[in-house]
Image (cartoon, rainbow, N blue to C red; front, side, top):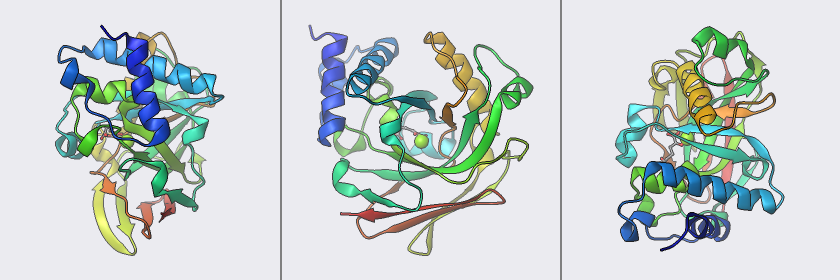
Length: 256
Ligand code: OOG
Ligand code: MG
């Protein structure tokens, strides 16, 4: 029997070396979601041991477009580290990833601790600022195919994120138009309302789920609310830009 920490070493090495692996459930069809979160926690402990620092959390599969794209219809979450943060306006090196995709997200900066069951008002009160963001997801599984347990074990495909300029917490991000364009050609169009009806619901879920795992949202954490549209697969040479109505623009280019 392979232990959960050995499985964590497999997904962590796949991420570190940008090497595709078979789904864990190919050989362990009974892998539970609970065990998958334990694998995720062990994989983050390995990153911490290499010097990476806690930066926050990401929510995933919080929109119908995303659920349909990957065929998993359960909200998932993962942990962000400082090594995943990429410089807005900069370059992303394609070679560091297996098969990266970009997706438009809303980022929350947490100002006060947030845990357990909270109301929308309590969640909003814990927010320090909001920003437009792009998440880079990169499933370590072959062909970007996975079950719920597989994706959770793989830190919910977290691999990178760009954050634009922070706006005051009073900025209403409930229903903002979003356009992601590549070399000036729109590839995804949507609204932040596609994120559970309002991205604040994603923050509420983050507080609940993270608390259930024995952690909490801390001041300084960034929480990505999940993509509002399907993700765009990246090719070297592309210039990717996402505009969020009244919130601003986030952009990067894809290097080889
Ligand atoms: C899973 C992660 C989903 C989102 O924003 O919905 C996610 C995946 O699509 O690989 O990050
Ligand atoms: Mg995402």
